[in-house]
Length: 146
Image: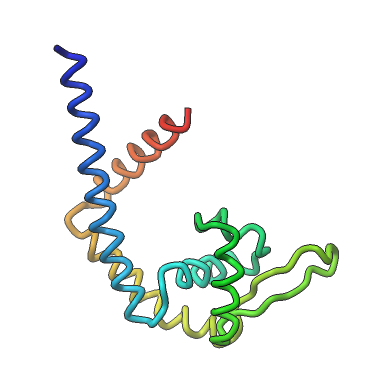
């Protein structure tokens, strides 16, 4: 009987986790759309804004999108004048994505608004609850990989 309860609880957790993710993600995407960017474009800009110049080959792994999509997104952002490509001087096979002045100015303007929006989405949790949830979700993620 205890095993059935654990299975039921696991299934319920999966559903609750999936719905919570969808709700939070949908709201976060609405925030991003206010800036006339799609979520992938925003993720690339946010990565470069916080981490600096990044090899194109590493962007997909850092923001969890397929490498084939990176070229398309980088092309779009380059056409918008928000980023540029730069060859590595030490290894010509490596190309870096860099924020342009316009890209940096855009992120300086919009990121604080997005950050506040994300804070508002999570307002039902206090800091201790957020830290507990972070710990538990990391534990779940690492456990699932094993």
